[in-house]
Image 1: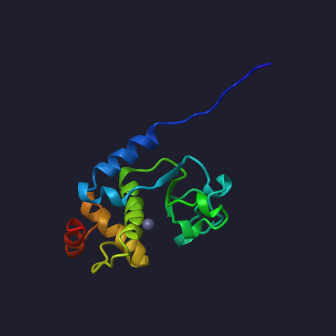
Image 2: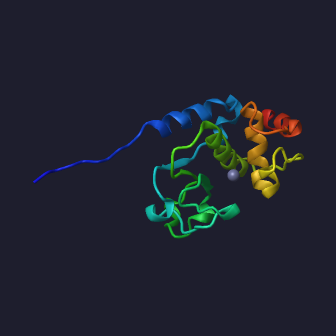
Length: 154
Ligand SMILES: [Zn+2]
């Protein structure tokens, strides 16, 4: 009988997460602590039961931030803010998802400028896009300098 172990765990996720965190100024590191679920479908894994993402996408294979309020199928004691990366992503995408983590941690600060078309989706995406545009050169066509100043002052 052949015994196989096909656990193809990649260190890709650890590397891009570390690189994304490094782009955050030190004063903001205390706001981006979270769990990560990588390389799998979060619904299959039992994290949450939300399937539909914006623009016709599915959360089964789309990077996203799952807050505790999205994890009602889990016992309350096991709910943690979780960045979900079902498939390998770029550093830019992880910076964006960590911005969602930070947004809740700092009390849902508002933006003044929608820096990209995706920022116009809602105020949560506006915040994540503004942070990404600040930390990742060339990420978006505009910046929200007022938001950047406010975040540096935290
Ligand atoms: Zn987002």
